Length: 277
Image 1 (cartoon, rainbow, N blue to C red):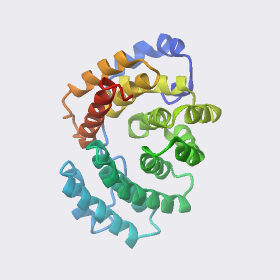
Image 2: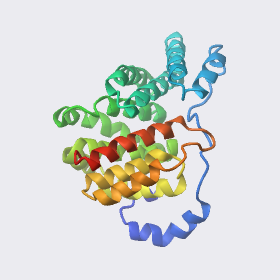
Image 3: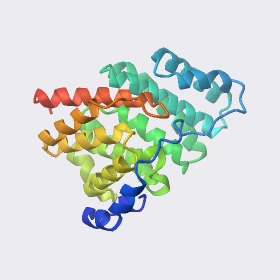
Image 4: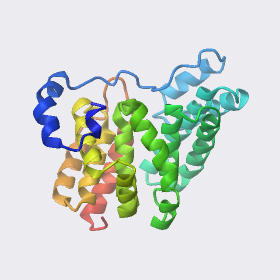
C-alpha cells in the first residue's frame, strides 16, 4: 500500500490489488500510542495514565505538561522531544476541534519547538518530521494564503520524507495531512506539492486506500469529505460527513481523536450547509 500511494492510476490500483486489499481489511488500530514507551524515566509512570485518560482535556493538558518536563530534563533524548511534540499537538487539536483554535495555538507552537529540537539531532527522524508537520500545519491553518505560502517549503520537505520513509505511520495519516494542506492552502499549495511529486491523484488514491484499510481512523474519512468539498463536489461531501458523524467514535483501542474528527466534520458540514465553503 505504501508503494501504491505513489501510483496515480486508480483503475490499475483497484483492478490489480482491490480484491486482495478488501480481503485483508479492515486492519486493527494496533498501536494507539504511535511512539515507543519511555519506561526508563520515573515520570513515565505518572504520564501514562494521564495520557490514556486524555479524553478528559484537563488530564490531557497535565500529560502534555509532564511530557514537556521529561523533554526538558533530557534534552539529548530525541524521542522525549517527539513525545512532547505529540502531546502538545493533542491538546492543540482538542481546542481546534471545539472551535477554540486560538486557545490551541500556544500548544502547537510548543510542539513545533520540541519537534525542532529532535530534528536538530536527527534530521531524518520520521516521527520527529511527522509531528513537526502536524504542529506547523495546524498553527497556520487559519492564517492568510500568503502566510501559508511562506511556510510551504518548510512543510513539503518533511512531508516528502515521511511519505518516503514510512507513509503507513499513524495509519497513513501523512496522506490526510497532505490533503488538509491542499484544502487549506489552495491552488498554491496544490501546485507546489505537485512540483515536489505529490499530486492530487496521489492524495485522492492514498486516502481511499487508507480508509479501506483503517476505517476506524476517522480523520481519513474527514479528509476525503474535505477534499470533495474543495473540488466543488458539495453533495458528495455532505453525504460522507453525515455518515462519519453518525458513527460511534468508540473503537478498540479507544481513540479520543476520533471524537475530535467528528467535531471537525460537524464544523465543515455546517459551513457547507451555510454556503461558507
